[in-house]
Every structure is written in C-alpha cells, then in structure tokens.
Amino acid sequence: MDRLDEMFDRRHEFMDVLNQKIPGASPLDLDLSKKEDQQICRDVALRGVEEMFEALQHLKNWKPHRVTDISGFDREKFLEEMVDAFNYFFSLLIMTGFDAEDLFREYCRKDSVIHKRLEEGY
Image 1: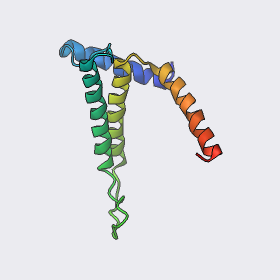
Image 2: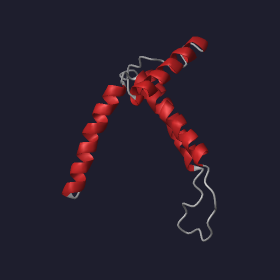
Image 3: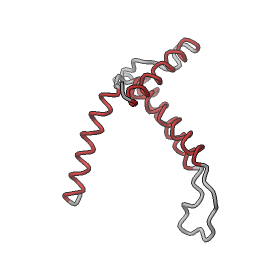
Image 4: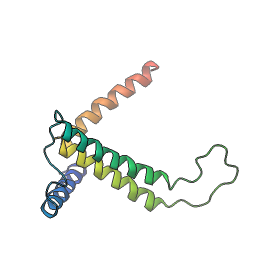
C-alpha cells in the first residue's frame, strides 16, 4: 500500500467512525444526479476551501504594496490547515465514489495535459 492509499483509507475510516457517532454526518454514497446530494457535495467542497483560506491567513507578506516585512512564518500551522483542506477534499472524493487509484490516474492524465500546454505555448 502506498501513502496515497493510506491517506484515503485513513479518511474513509474516520468517515465510518463519524457516521457511527453521528448518523449521516458523512454520507459515503452520494448520487450527484440528486439535488440534495449536490448540496452536500458543495458544502463539503466549501469546507475544504475555507480550510485553504485559513492556511492563507498564515501568509503575512503577500501584499505587493506592503513596505515592511512581517518576520516569521508558522510553517506547522500552515501545514495543519492544508491537511484539514485535504481531508475535506479526500472526503468529497470518497463520498462521490472515487479512490486513490482514480485520483492518481486523473492526476497523471491532467499533468500530461498541462505539460503539453506549456510546451505548445498555451
């Protein structure tokens, strides 16, 4: 088992435990042809985006007009928020029936596409 498989397995296990404690909190079989399941999908995706924004809050020197630098960067807190975001995105993939192999295959396909675009002057 590779690390991506392990990450998916850990998240799936967490979702199972969560559903035992709070039934329906993390549905494992969304049907995206249904309006209510699309709403669940959207809510989970937005939670992931919120975690990304929390990670971005740790970046203090991004403003181009800022004259003074803010020293220090909490690398661990930034990474913690990124992991939170990934967890929501892993949940979303699991809820919609995808696994580590699906993600890896699509990642490789899309990586080829963007490299081709770069080579061709996209």
